[in-house]
Length: 413
Image 1 (cartoon, rainbow, N blue to C red):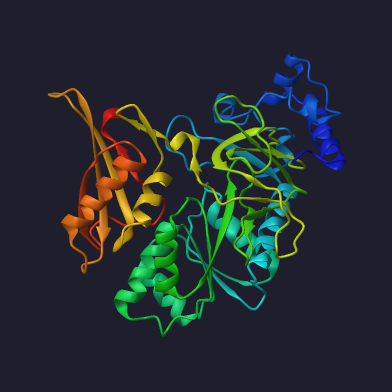
Image 2: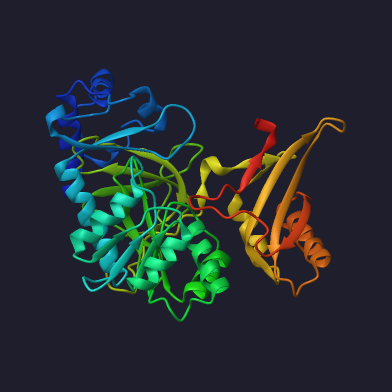
């Protein structure tokens, strides 16, 4: 999907504005002799940007406006290396709220709804983004923040919350607790807006069944405003994104070359009107594809497919590249296996070989030994790796209020 004339003009204006600053990208583009763009080919000559750039520019080297125009900063939730800090102008904050309100509207949420917000507040973009969009829409915000499940459930019942916003991991915690405590008839939830991590179909089904709600995938990342730059519609045929604010291209993560529409690859995002920290051709490492056909819902906003994983989520065992998404596809095919799993990888020094242990939860009605054998066979035939499999009862694996860590690689520790 190529830039249209308006988007090209917006990218050209962003470059010219950056060149007038002493910012990290202003200096970089001057050194490279980049003065603007007139065609798609000009655009594709702009170098990619990434988290390494933002860490090199720490703390505020990417700021492209004077200090007096910055009204807020946010930081990514990553835990490695220097944090990434993103400055926002008042317009950036308002644009983000507008996009987020649009997400709620696509999900069929109105001013009459009461939205319980469980993602974290503070430097992280999640909680405050969900709240700003809620207020822009005119709905009632219940800004709980993360954790304290007892209080969450009490407020959910007492305030008759109709929408829950959460990571999929915490939505599962709430669903399990509602079922365990027999509260399903007391809650008024109708919809859930879920973000920040990819989630399997089994987990989706468990949350839907536990809370009795429609679920919507919201997309975003701190570097590009935060959550709210896209959401799936009621047809569940991909994620609509707001092409009046961002441009998305899909590239081959190895070569960096754009791939044809419909082909899978890595999402690269350009901010078209962002002021505080404009980013051109930012590599997200999220894997998806452009869906070229119009959506049956009738909306004209373009779509990407649901996020399939991350190019940097890959792990290698016995020389075989693997992704959590492949594991989830295998587990989905085994009767009685639930959504929660964890992968531990270690190196056996005595035999000089890697060992992979996959622990999964299953329903008590199935034979754990036969279930483990079935999973092992599928791994061998589909991926070419034979792991050790441990099948445990429902509720054995730890639950998370944030993102769930699926792969623990002891070789890196």
